[in-house]
Image (cartoon, rainbow, N blue to C red; front, side):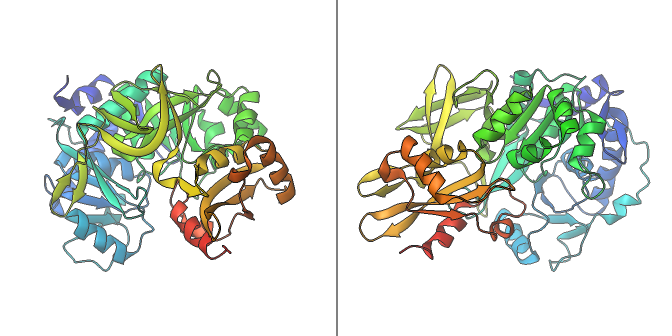
Length: 472
């Protein structure tokens, strides 16, 4: 088992390969990490020290990856957050996580010692610093990712280089990622799925390329750069499939990897009919992102293959995890808390394990009881998503005097298709028992765009609160 993550060895092995690419720049491993060394020196001059937690709140995608590797070079713990969170929330995060600095482009109402303005980096003269002695103990804290979990209250998942390294190794092994490959990044770096792409490419000697918001469209980036791999959420894929040229470019990809919320059957069928190599993953922040992957071309059922360096078992229908990818715990005021039960992490996800493959059936805390019957919202959502024209569906409990709670469904149709409640009900009667058919079937609220801004998944807690005002 590796005890050291030797960055220098990898940089020297692939020094002439292109590592970073965008519409504005292209850097080899060698030139990229010389910039990293220069930025590390600059960060040191700003007071950043080893073992400090540093919040990244900047929006410049060009400098973001360089800052991540530069902070790691210093020995700091990187904590990327959504740049749209307000100053008051940032102050709370600093307090709760013991962060020492916030790096961003816009001065905030924070203690002067906390904020570091990174705009000077755009004019920084990158000297040709050699990158020496860039290696880290696998057990060194490296990254914090904010996760809300089921409670809605933010938690700060702390990862070491070990968990990040082995997560990347497992995904790379599944996809057979090589130095000839090229992964287009469309997900934000404050999500573990976006940041994980950097390390996957780094370990494989591959290239990552950035989408430059406001400067190029996703369609243009795909058609111009011809990536071999791309990570998307289903709404992105759905729009891309409407463009014939982009569909051909996606067909040439080795992997189109979907994450985020549940995927409508119509989107999957459309992609497969075009010959696209479509995959989706099951994962969570506490495991460094992906735990298992489903190949939609070969797997007819909702089963996903468990990746290397992950251990999975199911106890009382709940998915339990452990392995080299497991996080170090939640960063809290008083230290790090790792909530394990007999060495296993309880995910709160429900599933079925068979032949080293996992089927995720829902969330333990989403289930509710209606008239004595257990109702798992995800079962109803999956049925709705397999109906023609429905691109999003979410089911929550609604209080009911007779049954205690009844299901309430929110539906979003594809553009150009009219809402038809009777048609939905008629279809559900064929596929579900009567007690699982929602009492209310409502159109997707316009307010959702505001409450889920910056998030890959919509917040179920918001829908529950919203639905409470609509119940009888």
